Length: 199
Length: 199
DNA sequence: GTCTATATTTTGATAGAC
DNA sequence: GTCTATCAAAATATAGAC
Image (cartoon, rainbow over all chains, first blue to last red; front, side):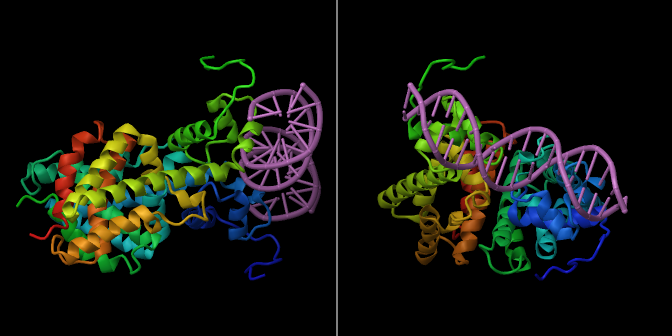
């Protein structure tokens, strides 16, 4: 019995606590392996009924999480694009952000990169059609237009570049690569950038 | 009612029919979104009881599928390694195989690349610890030893190379890239190989 | 706004007739 | 070896007391 709030009565729970707990559980064991009972245990209330005060159902929790993560990412990318002009600089900062997130908020990155969201949120847009990724694709378009990136289908440039970046992060998240993401960042950037740079 | 075998009585079903139907359903809608009822409908028997004649439970079906796919892949890779000496040639043929499979047996590739198998088969080894992928990693080790591939951690070589290949295939499987996989093969190979080749 | 208690539904799974 | 019939378990979800 190493539960923190054992037998205390009427613990008060906020929507954000629920989201945090759900994120951890979804990242660790997947959406379908996580029941509302698991979530209620994690936030320390006695029944699942408390959850329904804040969220309509389990899907809504996942949807809110997905939305929050994409919003936050979108804002970061806006900021990066504002502060940098060259595609190489923008991509470098995005890579920096993703590697940092992998070390500091792995659950967020698991949700973003490992989990197939459309499997439990069929209403949601596929990842590539969401604002942050639309913006990233735009960076490749501009990079090609400006001659920084070699002439090829922008979507393929995106694919090669993020193939390397996201597979590296995936290997870190799964533990197949056993050091922190930051250990691999410099090399991965070089490898990824070299696939698209105009020489 | 466009069901083929409507109202015929006592349809006989083989284990392989069940596996094929399950593979399609798992690939299309995911393991957890696929019930035994879905599978029984797909194979055209009247109740789920018939399935239990051939498989102990739902997990066993997925496990058999996973095993079959890995076995088949392993055999193909053995064959490729036997017929080719250089790492570049071996990898080229493996890439060829994977792109062909993506066009000709997309469900198999979905199972292999898009589905997080450990989520519903917790007993199974992670993909990278299975024979076919152990052999692929070996190819990178040998390539480095022989000076064909530049000196770097073999697992990173694997990561960069297959980052590009598998992300490209993933984009095809999800429909984000809208032509057949074979349209992208030559370019993807060049991009992937260039990240590891010794120049 | 959390609690007790319960309803509802779905799904995985089995027993025994044919 | 498929069928009918049924079970058991688990999970989502709700009603109403406090």
